[in-house]
Image (cartoon, rainbow, N blue to C red; front, side):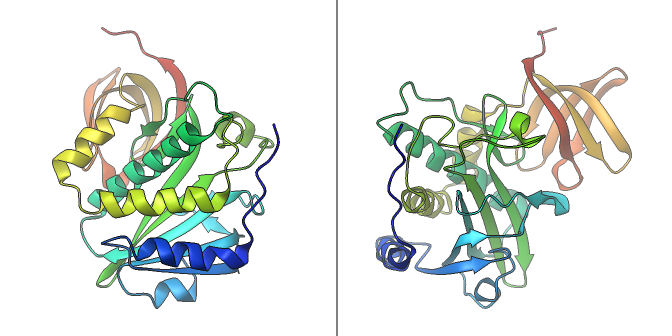
Length: 267
């Protein structure tokens, strides 16, 4: 496959600003040449609600619970959306749905992608394909606004070490797309998701749910817990069947530590 010729960074600002003029919720965009994290950039901290801040290269991205987002030079999308503050669980769901929709659009529009890959959401907000992470979401509250941080793996041809078994990219999945096209698809998807009702967001989550019916190891305040995911309320938490019985794990204090691809046999 031949790689898509990248759109010059100088064109990013104009493309994104023109797109924002067509939208209702995200009305302005700032494109940075490089930053440690779009979440931490001064432009993000000073922005009003309705602003997108993105970067040609992000060198020290952050994930949920302080995890690092691997720097892969200029192969991924890093975007932070400053929005009006609201429930963190709703914003996480908005980010998850928007990221999955944007990745789905990129995979579906690529002429080289062949059969469309199944894009799922691994609770609470990871975009996954075949059990591997394609995109992630980080929500942070700052006074009267909140920041939805979204990272998408776009043109990486491979991942090294442990990431080789846990991560994937649009390119690995067969979609040779320019990052600016993925960014604009994400911008549109996020703008739409911000006005969706809770019921619509929940329905869209369940249509992509990749975690229910699988076994996983969860990190909780009381220590690790393993079990089969019985049901998920994406804004509140999930019910897990363990050897000691069923237990509800709240979203605010639970993360998925390990997760396998195979689904558990129904009981």
